[in-house]
Amino acid sequence: MSMGHTLLCLLGVFLLNILLYCGHAQDSLLTIEPNWSPLFTGESVTFTCDMREGKDTDWYYRMNKDGREFLHYNTNKNYTLQPLDTGHSGEYQCFGSLKVSTYLPKESNKVSLTVSAQRPKAKLRAVRRDFPAGGSVTLSCSVNPSSGWKYFWYRGEKTSEPLNTQDAVFISDGQISVSQGRLYWCRGGRGDPVYYTEDSDAIVTNRAVVTLQPNWPEIYSGETITLRCEIKDGGDTEWEYEWKTTSSYKPQKQNQYIIRSASSSHIGEYRCLGRMKSGKFSTDWSDAFTLTLSYKPQPVLTVSPSWLSPGASVTLSCRVKDPSAGWRFFWFKAVPKLSANSYDQELLPGSSNGTEQDSYIVHGQTHTAGYKCRAGRGDPVYYTSYSIAKFVWSGDFHPATVRVSPDREQHFSSEPVSLSCEGNSSKWRVRRFTKAGHLSNCSKWGTMTGSTCNINELPNKTAVYWCESESAQFSNAVNITVQRPEDSSFLLQLIVGPVCGSLLIILLLLLCCYRKSKDSNFARTPQRTNPGSAPDQVVYQNETTVHSSHLHGDACLSESIRGSENAENDADESSYVTYSLIQLKHSSNKGQHNEPEESSLYSNVKTRSAAGRSSPAATEETVYSEVKIGTALGNNAPM
Image 1 (cartoon, helix red, strand yellow):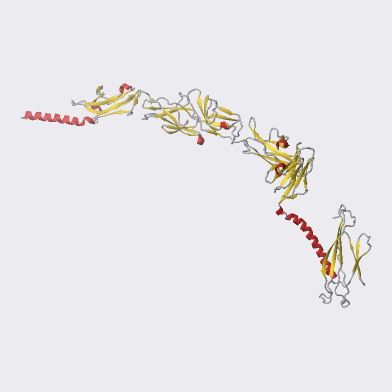
Image 2: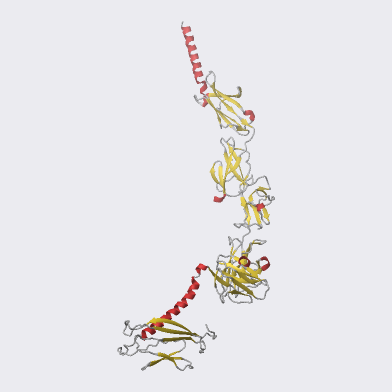
């Protein structure tokens, strides 16, 4: 009975140990370090078998690979494989047995190891280029798969040392920023000892730029220009060049493209890149440079003053777009060309090579003349068109003269006018320049007959007129003001003004004479004495008083005759009569007294009685005032 009980107890303990063992069999843990997948040939890996029970020295360790014993029992829980090769790929599991126990060993989990035979290659790319902001380039280096890699950066030759913080800005483990244009490359490394990837392809951070020479803001058709492909920070590196363009012409594989006489076929976008002759490394394509062309420009000439005065100089100013864009200025005298209805040009002194200043002063100009200008730049020199001819006018007569008939400055638009050219030439043309800046020939608004321009009806424009000959002569200039018929008040004023003035003087004289004679009680008769004498003498007589007046030259005499103060003695007088004689003479400048042709003007005045009131018995009589006007001109001609 006791024997059976004892055996039963032993069996229970044994079964309990088995159950305990089975419950802890999966508690052991196998790990692999580094736990990267895949690993590459040449790298190393360490297995660790952790029994999670007792001390590490209490166990014996064994490892299987793919179900077969790979490592026999030993006392080390760690095992390192180095260097790895593809044969190490497989599924691994470890076992542990207590040194003092005969129980079944503990099994760990299974881990897989993959070893690749192809060494990875780092990949380098330029993430961002900020050349305009600071001339920096951001580079990014990566390895796929990316587990556990650190990155090493190099510049120039691959034998160089890795870059440090003095050479570049380290943004992160896989990015740097560089400002120096050179050849850059990178590689990845991990583990201890460090396992390196293959080197990346190199990147050229030099920037290719298309530039224009000369660098003027605007290029014109016909100019000679050069497009260049410049490699920034290229140093002594030898480069080959490549171009691409949207224009009709593709540049050769050179660093510059010379365009002679640019035309519309050259318009388009141009890009270039540089490729190192020592390898296959190249820059990125440059930003596009767009070439545009403008039509040949024409400068604008101004002349000051417009009308010459004695001793004055003439200032010419030539204006072009973008005056600072390398222009030099050339100055010309305009030479009439009658056959082509235009002007040739003749270089002014000192302008054969052009002037840097855009102004030119002409000294000693005394007669009407025309001028031109143009600008030039580049090598060979590219010239603008000639400016429109501008003129400076003089009213002085010269070998060539223009005469206007009728000879006055102001004319009606409806009246005919002729302009005649005089001088040593057989062919002439008459030119007109309006305030609006329009220059034209007689044929546009008149008829040219020989040397005379006949205008039946003047245009309603005030303008300057002058003559030009085939022998390059300019006449004096005349300014003709044109009035429309409705604007003829100026002529009416010229006529009415003097007439009204004369009438006013006459009326004042009559009033003066009438008032003075009002106090006179004489009946008198004027007599002329000494008819042959130089001064005219008029004598007024009655029975008591004789008055005489002398009229000299333009002098005017007002005669006052006062009659008897006894009004009663004159009661029989129905009225009094006043006779006033006025003679007006104009002497010549030389003091000669010639007898002018006289004319008389009479004005009737009704008389009143001496008492100052009308008398029924009195008969009203008329008083006549005689005004004689005589004129002696400087040439003794009568008016």
